[in-house]
Amino acid sequence: MARQELKIGVFGFGVVGKGLYEVMKQSPALDKAIKKICVRSKKQRDLPESFFTYNPDDIINDEEINTVVELVDDSEAAYHIVKKSLQKGKNVVSANKKMIAEHMAEMIALQKEHNVSLLYEASACGSIPVIRSLEEYYDNDLLLSVTGILNGSSNYILSRVFDNGQPYEVALKEAQTLGFAESDPTFDVEGFDSLYKLVILTMHSFGVVINPDEVLNYGISNISDFDINYAREKGFKIKLVGQVERLRENKITLFVLPRFVGRDKYIYAVEEEFNGVVIKGLAYDKQFMFGKGAGGHPTGSAVLSDITALMHNYRYEYKKTNYFQGFSYFKDAAIEIYLRYRDKEVLSHFDFQSVSEEYRGPKNSYVIGFIKLSSLMAIREKLRDKQLFIAATGKALNY
Picture (cartoon, rainbow, N blue to C red):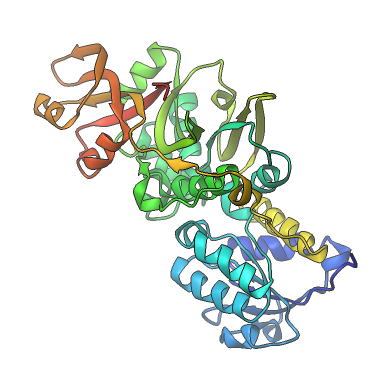
């Protein structure tokens, strides 16, 4: 099939947009491919003013532009940009994980209806080509689980806490100063960023569209010195981990939680702003993918990879929706958690199936036991209580 000549319209010129432009300048085939960049407001930029527009329709209605690259922060704005572009018959590259996760079914349908391609490698793990690997290499029924550190900001903070002995608040402020975390870090440290990425990876792993609102995500903001010291005494680090796992009888389960990670795990050594993904299967056991999950150039390189793929008429086939029949999301899977608390009354909210370890101290106490994910989902607002912290131990009951 002949290579397609691209005329590109870009939405957004922030960190990723600038990173994309800089990496594209190093690609001879795409050096002159950008025709117009849409931004919200006028300000001093390195490119000539003629490159920019402030009206989205200048790109969407331009028949010469056949490819749209969406790199805006606002997921609602991203949704309208991507939807209108697909309806206009333009191929699209997006990095907006929240928009894609929340509108996955509609995005798949729009591609089919208008015979266009939407690629979003940069939405999942920055520079790590995990989506295309799941689509093309792990496109069989041998896949068992995908587990990983999916958020560079929270991993940077936890690395500073465990490797440098910094207090959580100091590490968070440093991450914000360096640009790894936003001034409002909730999206990263509470696990929402990891959640949306996990929903996307679940689609490409098992062919199932999951509503993000129905998945447990819990972050690291409640972590205390007590939790850190407990982990160190046991030889663990704490990492924020997302996991989707295949169970028996065509069931899958998924969640985002802090986790105790030992030295024998691949992700133990994933530090700073890096991401790491472990793909487990029946025939190949475990395979590990590692790379930078954030930053202008790493994310820009993933966007560039998708743009280059469009030159060769690539599109996701969503194969697993066709031949993976009957997978269902199972919310009653039980996992073992560590619960640290101060007021023993909090235990009345936790429906533990079994308890393997308990400690009660003058200030902090903890319990380790198995509990259903559905039980944790039912009390997830109570989990935000600053007087408690939960983490997965890595153990689960087989179903």
